[in-house]
Image (tube, rainbow, N blue to C red; front, side):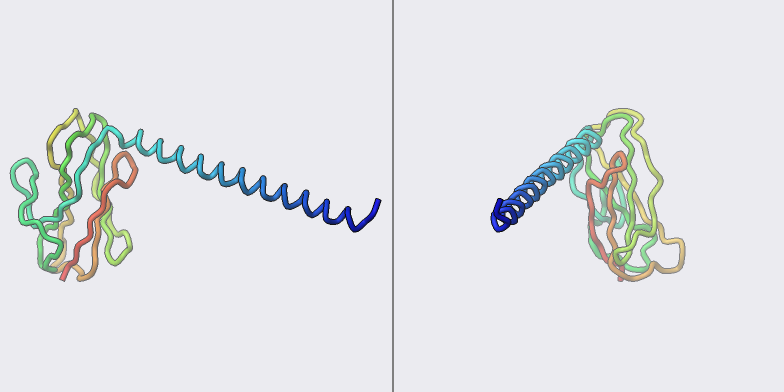
Length: 156
């Protein structure tokens, strides 16, 4: 057997094997991503939420009052309000608050004691000092441990 043909044959076999592994790997990753998306949908699927509205206050039924994305550092409370078309009984929710991209506080988790339709869910950040730190803030709403909505705002 001629060695010059053995090396290209070996190289071709290696190349084909690598291509097969790459193709298989991509298929596995795509399958895993798709499966995770399906799981997240199943986990938060019983909840239908609208966008987060940042507000200076809340009114009847927790509806947002004074919607804004800019707050004074002397603001006593900042509200994040989510309009919910439907929340299934047993659904848990909490808000994670960020300042300048870093998480600094999680709200207390709430659990729906029954099914809710056409309601508002409020989370709030309370100013426990004389003034809040100025900066870029955001809040991320979690449903059954999965992030589902987010809103950004500033404190000046």
